[in-house]
Length: 493
Ligand code: Q9C
Ligand code: ZN
Image (tube, rainbow, N blue to C red; front, top):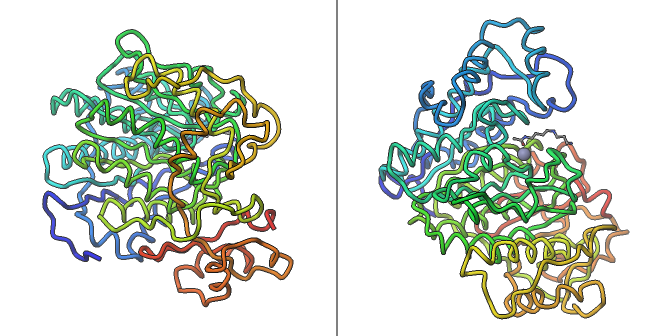
């Protein structure tokens, strides 16, 4: 493993400043209570503990200028946020109530300017070639904020401003934004819906428009407007519980064909980790290793010029672990593609190992591909099918596809299924049962996994076990040696 890589064109930037931990909720509001300063401090602490921060080129943040902010926001809105610096708690609360899921703090304006400034520093370093890629750890997040509105914990739209900055000040003509946060970044979508120079991809928990922010514009058939038609790509998750295989399938079958055809000069990632396992907002099951795979899959684009910018992520352990695996991949550490057999693992508690996507995910994939086929040659094949009638509207996420696709529920998915099964993504996570009670010994785990049951914990893994007791799963990636406890294991077992 390359330690202490010297700064240079191949280096990885990390941008963080503890001052962005100053904003916090000053009143009682259950909806905003999850957006805490520890999201930043505990994530950075873990990066240091793993020795990852030390391997990065650590760049200072700067405060964005009002001119920077006005690349996306109106002067009137910037003035409103600026005014919060001298407001009382009561005044801050009253202002926050004008927006959806937002709080303000006397440090909101300086912190939000710093979040934008950190993102711009990262983009400048990557675009000028001072570093190869990098990550900015910022608060407040940005992707929900709009020209005239704060929204969903977001004040200024860090990534949208960075894209506009890259266009106007570096002359870039094609920028890809990958928004893997579990919420729809409607602020980014609206900023670029008419703009063919910014390809915006977002997946998001949708549940047929019942999940926040409950917008019609988040569905797969909303593709951009005017010259921007085809440059907005929405993948709705209509069920919770999506796993690594679902995420990777969307990358392989939707994002990557379009991204390769688009040929971006820069990739910006709205890197929210509420799409990771354990997060109370997303309720998804992608393990931290998944974010290593997603990052790895993006690195061939734009000659590796990738800037990841933190958005959401509210389960602190999962957030920190996911950020570690993202940064580790940016640093060039290998991704473990998994070693246990891909096929024949029954659905059940071991479903986290399942390498096959859910029916509901395949349905979304098929629908977004059909909606975008008119705009992208890479999606046009003789056998590309029509939009599907939702077959997973009710019930759970649908069966996972384990080599028996002809069981009725999947009939409508046959064309896509044939494609997926003829070229399945590799098994994506290695996992072992740890302290599994006897009642779980009926689990049909591959023998190689069962052998490892009960091995002693390493230090960093014990830290993860702490708040869940001894029952759970430890996840380990052979090269990265990362550990993780699945809190859902209680109910699964
Ligand atoms: N349970 C970001 O992740 N509350 N913002 C939704 C649904 C608002 C999320 C309530 C969530 C905002 C950056
Ligand atoms: Zn989010």
